[in-house]
Length: 275
Image 1 (cartoon, rainbow, N blue to C red):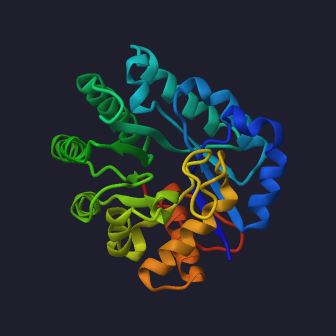
Image 2: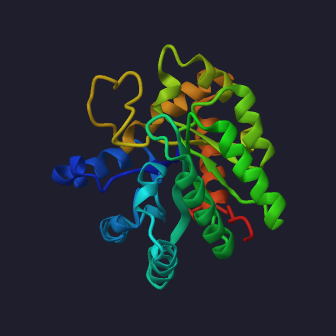
């Protein structure tokens, strides 16, 4: 059984002392591939180093909405240049992000909208999917993506990561062609809306992630640091919610991640989406 953790942050300080041991544990847990997200382009060197060290790690480049005020005139060009640089290596960028809107912790709505749309433009130009962070901003994120499609005539591919929305909100993004990724929050006892959303997502649009080092799943919630080996708990919870086997969830979410991000796993015939 192979799993793909579709959203990690392994370059954070908490992993520096024992990253090799963390890797051993994810391998033992059947995690065959990981997608490393990016908070700011300044992280590129550290993320790229991890991807070169561990060939099962792919990565994204982008600017998190809570860092939207750090966007400068040259940031878009910087992201493009880093994508081109990585594509010349054996560790190509597979997505732009994480990007999006977060009105839970910040109120700079105009700036967040500007940066979100700028990164959607880069992803469209480069033919890459997007990793979207959306917290307390589902209505606005939907409007941005709908207007983008109407204005540009493009249907941006991507994933709503660490999804925490209601079933109604979930359907909005499914209708826009997005994948929905569930993290350890789906295992939390009181996460009824998230669990209801997890029950309704079609098989071909569902992904799993840890968002480590954050959001350790039940039964690991007492641990301060989440890690990729724990993504199996997310798969197990989805299997319970959806009345499927863990193997079925693993196979489907792995196939979906390969399709969205253009990942090729040894022994599979999964092809990336055309750009």
